[in-house]
Image (cartoon, rainbow, N blue to C red; front, side, top):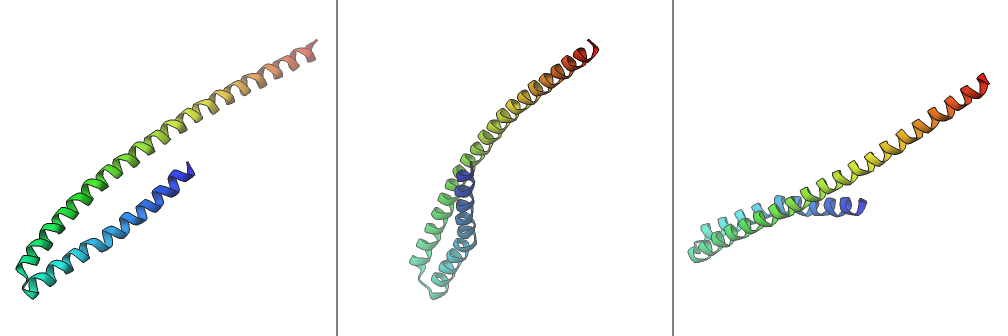
Length: 109
């Protein structure tokens, strides 16, 4: 479980870094090609920026869905573990009550 947490934490750092830097790199590239006057390069940079942003958005979407599924699987595992713990606590409680009532009967005898 900790391994999934550490891996996801590292992946989130990568996504944050990409979200901070890629838009500025794209805007700088578009601005430079536009103001320098390279219209062919401008068209190429705009097209490639749109393709990269769309690809990243689709990849991120699938990554987020995968992590959401992982989270819900973890919730199910936790629920099963808690159900087992609850069962064990109930059995222990019943055993303690049984032992207590046996002692009370012995005292009465």
